[in-house]
Amino acid sequence: MPALIGACVIAAVLAGIMSRRTSPLAVLIVAPFIGALLAGHSPTQTSAFIVDGLRALIPVTGMIMFAILYFGVVSDAGMMDPIIARILRAVGCDPVRITVGTALLTLIIHLDGSGAVAIMLTVPVMMPLYDKLGMDRRILACIIGMSAGVNFLPWIGSMVRTSAVLHVPSTEIFLPLIPVHLSGLAMVFCTAWHFGRREAKRLGLTATACPREAPAYTISEEQRAYRRPRNFPINIAITLAVIASLATQLFDAVVSFMLGIALALTVNYPNVKDQLRRLEAHAKPALMLGSIMMAAGAFVGIMKNTGIITAMAQGLVNVLPAGLEQHMPFMLGLVSVPISLIFDPDSFYFGVMPVLAEAYKALGGDPVQIGRAALLGVYTTGFPITPLTPSCLLLVGMTGLNLSDHQRFCLPYLWGCSILLTILAAAIGVFPF
Image (cartoon, rainbow, N blue to C red; front, side, top):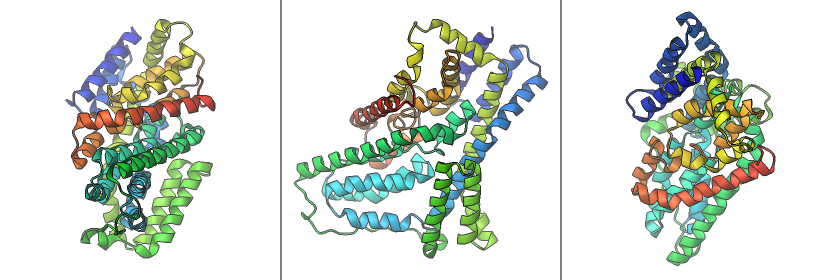
């Protein structure tokens, strides 16, 4: 009975989210609440389950909210401006430099963990160069998507969702993946170099084939009012300190970003009114994602404490072919990019992953390995080609590409990268083959 109720709850969550008839926030709270009542638990008990789920998720929610605020504030202060300007001066009109520069610029902008922001800032800067030389815009979209997708930092949405579902710090998930992450970044630059060489040969261009004009990088007057160029060294130092504290686990992730935003606000905007304006400017995305995380905490708290997830996992274990169970993480990694075309992020991470993780745990495996495997493709390298995420539609919209053409061009590179990363992860022991 609990397994059947769980299946109905997850079906309701998937239907509600994917049909866009209700918000993820609402369905993640209401569906499991009703399921708990049907399973015989009182409203008071169900309320306690929700609180238990929220208690476990507070550090994760705090981290993502303060991370958004931190990177928003240092970007407002102009930390990215000199880096972007220098990249643009360096690329000139050499296709190889342009493609590699596109990858580098995307990775730097994507430090805030938002694929949409990386797309919105990189496309307007780089697309005029591609158009000026007659370079293929599909290459621009592929490099941006691949760069942002492979860069699965501890505060990106997929990592935070995984952390929420598995009830472990995102740094615990990420640290064993660092060699895989660095290898993925190397693949990005190799792919960008390959594209550049191909375009240079097709167009007959070299680094000296035309004058090295520095493309203009401009900002609005409103943005200029909040720029603090003199503080660039200080902002870089604070950012490096925050990243170092995450890597070394000197502080909890949420504490690192809390200290970071406090320092960034104080250094760049001593005036209290300016501080409040900068916080208000970035409060909406922070609050939206934070509220989704809290709703996920309610979902996981109910499904776990009622025993529904355990019952569903046992049902899955019973139908798995013999000998297949130990390969679950590896197999998930191999198909993680296509999964992005089937499920939207909330549906997979809050609906499907808990069942897979609990089933793997029942078979004696570490459920964190399921999370790490999923991060090698599900809404990381997979997000640039799935219309189930606004970022993909934003990318094709801003580059003026047809979605099907974009998907056909990018899929071999993105899926190939994901498969190679999965094989590497298994080879170094992140999860078994």
